Length: 263
Ligand code: NAP
Image (cartoon, rainbow, N blue to C red):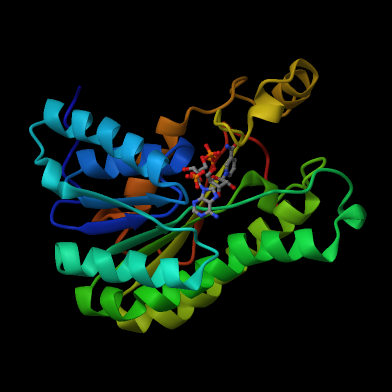
């Protein structure tokens, strides 16, 4: 396994929803870039098995396993968000990078059929929890001096994806949150950016990527003619959170295999 460039050496990173899929891939890449990494998700058993996998990665690269920590955090629960930040600071002495990656999409169908409860859940988890987590992390990111926040949005922020309209609306809201927080947090030395993946092969996208008709349809709009791999999200995330992007804030980086995007 190749050792990456150490672009996050000495940093402490928290990544939500990072026991699987894109969040896990970002955690793995951050670890390889020298960051101390705190992974989290709702279920202890998922945290444990993801940590086990990451310790193996660390071992192969001679990275101390003590650079890793994991805990349960359901991003929709305020007490969990507090613990996530507090425990990170207690364990690693500070916080430099927050990656807000968690999202849900419990309703499938026309947007006008989505009921209030489902709409609230989508907005609470995907948008409000991201915002509240930033508030929790703010004092520590300020203290760090050059803190960085990354939201994980989606191509759905730009294009209405069939069946998941409310989810797409929540992902568009993250573009606005990125712009607004970037403007206000710049004076604290904190950059705020956003990553918008296209269709990436994970459990979340299985209903699309595992469906022949949907795959055929998507290949008509993906110039690269394939779905993305979660590991391909690690590089863009490192770029936005590292000093390589020291003059980049308020931006969204599309990683979609070339899907056309425009608001
Ligand atoms: P995934 O493979 O299904 O992974 C989901 C992860 O989120 C798991 O670790 C899960 O663990 C955790 N999780 C779920 N709900 C949570 C919550 N409320 N609080 C904390 N953790 C939670 O999903 P993914 O495809 O990697 O998606 C990650 C992000 O990428 C999402 O923001 C999604 O919108 C975005 N995205 C995905 C795609 C795609 O095609 N896959 C495209 C564009 C954007 P537990 O079950 O233990 O909680």
